[in-house]
Image 1: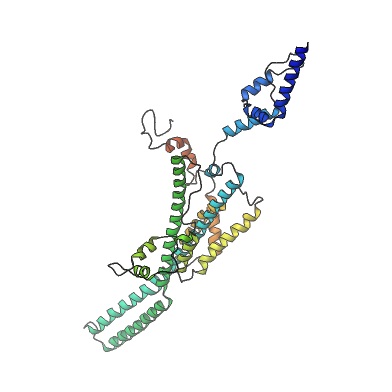
Image 2: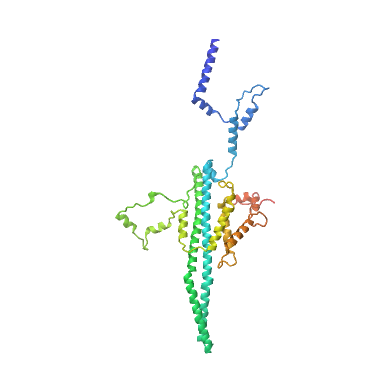
Length: 414
């Protein structure tokens, strides 16, 4: 009897040590495996009831069931975007990544809007120069020359007729001089050249910004796949300024350094000029400002007002009705480029363009009405290609990987 009592006391001491010692308790808790859904179901089915005897399997708590369900749901969750991979499940970081992409889209929209205005202005001023001043001046000069030849020829023998023709030649010369003076004063050709040069620069900037963003995304994905590191945000060269002070030259230079800087090539230019010209260390905004500052001509008020009316009307009518302005379902930074192109098309297809410009209010109303028609999915909408392509989406995705044959046809079976 005494031996049984001693054994019971030892068991009580060992169990109290296991529960009161934190390291041992933590180690025991960490060693506990997370049950699967099958084990949870089996444990509940074999748990003791009021009528039946108790089972020998361990009792499973509600916390285990909830944690197991969360793990199964997380395993079944699919990746929906690249931002979700970069954020690693962090909601705040994922939101900032989406705002970063949206801000870049809005910058590109502003560049596109200015580029379209500059292009339309170049077409307008060039048409005025050609059809209003240049061609009439050429025709008047040509007529004056033909009449001058007739006066000196033997075809006109009457002195009165010669006097009339000489008077007409003098009038044509005066008119031609007047047109040339106006052409030089207004300088529509020079203004058209300024706008065209600015439009070309903005078009290149817009194209390079999109290519650079794509290249940065590709490089980050390739680096993650090749090195096995976590996917990160790629560096956008056009959207970021280089603030590294170590790259700046020192303020004080010696005589030898100054002599090296003055060295020139065979063509008489500095050797460093070409390298500095090739560099594009400026940000996207800096290059946009540089392109716009090169144009000293003003955009016609009809063109600029049309774009401003459409932008302000969209923001007032649509954005003011949004309940959740931060987490809105419609991203206007993706919608605006199509509207900008549609407005440009409305102005270009105007009957009097490029000499005459349409009323801004009419241009905006016509653009929005025509643009809304293309949002309807029906047989009359030529842009609705999704319904025709969805049947062969898998084959298009893998097009080029395998050649079409009997077992792998290009077209789906009828």
